[in-house]
Image: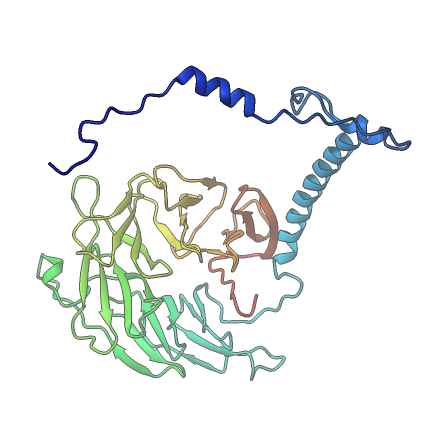
Length: 406
């Protein structure tokens, strides 16, 4: 059909013959002669290890042991240096006394720049202190009574430092400008309405208040009407949000302190039933996102709750004579609890140092003591770093300014 070789048989291979041919043509292995020994190379030969390596802890040279001892001693010295450095970080080399009046100072705040200080007391006075224009007499450049016959329970400068939030024994918070002139007053709620969410403002005495850390016009107040309220400074006729504090069985409990965390994602409140309650500002304020029911003794006011600068820790101060440090990642138990800290006033507070390494609080004067002290505690080990006697009266408010370091 024109196809040559059609049906040709396939070529066959002999496997044994192929293997024999490959062995015959394979190259012979190279034989390397040992190099002649050169004098002085014995040390290099001795260093060569033949066979499996010994375990790491089988033999240790004396030099390595000495290095290990040296490193241990260096670590202990570093720990001692760290303790000494904590004491050195406390700005207690100089002190000066400024006379506010004859009654207890229960409110204190400094503006963000550190140029001015404001203090409020039980005798209704609010004093303004200007460090730049102050002479040796250490007098306040302005004293006024913004809330008439109500004690000043809390004051705080805004983020920009141009306004001051004033919380008094009244049910209406006020905002003053930098020189003490009134800018806004919150509206008073209707006392005959039982549902506190339907009133336009607080109906009972205020207990605490603070500014929003990021927004210039927003602030928070707490009251004995068992609510926290979020306000806009532009319009004080009605609150923005109402938060109700509840006890274990759903009944009302009174908040005695309130604060924002550093990025304003949480609002925390310390209540009279010994609980610390928190709400997420990005959600509806119906249920708490964190709640520590038995944080402190029931019936004793939690006079202060404050977040660390990093926001990972929370400190609480109570009138039951304790201060506790909490880890925000695990709120079931406190990290440290500090006892024997007598507090007579329900505005006694605690603060973190600017680097969060030290927790500071004041104690009230007991009968058997000669002077009240400021106590400094290490936040990592709970050890008392230092104790500074201040005066023969109660230490109520403590302020550690991060810019001035005073």
